[in-house]
Length: 259
Ligand SMILES: Nc1ncnc2c1ncn2[C@@H]1O[C@H](COP(=O)(O)OP(=O)(O)OP(=O)(O)O)[C@@H](O)[C@H]1O
Image 1: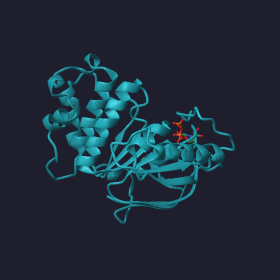
Image 2: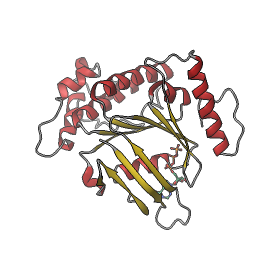
Image 3: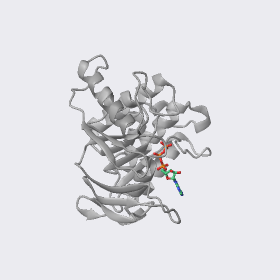
């Protein structure tokens, strides 16, 4: 499903300074977009607007040419955050099956909870409770929930940032496999420049508040991507420059993470 933002501006109620100002953007269906920017610049606010949890102050958002109508679009977007938000009194299977309530009204789910758990490698843990799962496994349950929900747009707000590097890399690979298979449109907020270049089709750099698009970079490299490829480093350097110049700072070669 494609996404169109037109002059999107947003201020929180009773706040005079806008968080986002005049964002105009087209995201084609099935594109994997990473969003990076300094802490507090408005990345999560942008995702909340796309989820219909907030309404634009000016401008609009359209999905496949139809104006967004707020939270009633629950079947259009699925959300994944840093915390998996599993219900501790339900098993893995029951937590995933809860997502059936958010599938497209009147249509049978695209994927059963059993198949979704199999896809994320957790079939053997279907009857375990969340406290018996590691942080990485809990985020796999959250991924399985996305699969069952079957939404064409996945909004992902730093979903792996609380995990150790190796687990994060494993989960990123799983996410990439799932995206290549199902081709949802992904908007993925991250603080990791390398991870963004490794996974995304396109990277948007937001400038500090009020956020505008400081850079819009397409990553043209075959997958799987090799961090040692010279073009990979060129993208990383380009992003680092845009990020720090939009913030009025000098970048250093060690800025693997933004903040
Ligand atoms: N409910 C709210 N009411 C008022 N201001 C808010 C609210 N939520 C966020 N803000 C402010 O809006 C700005 C953008 O916040 P947001 O969480 O979107 O930033 P972010 O780029 O996602 O940050 P981070 O990378 O640290 O998660 C910040 O200055 C924040 O303080």
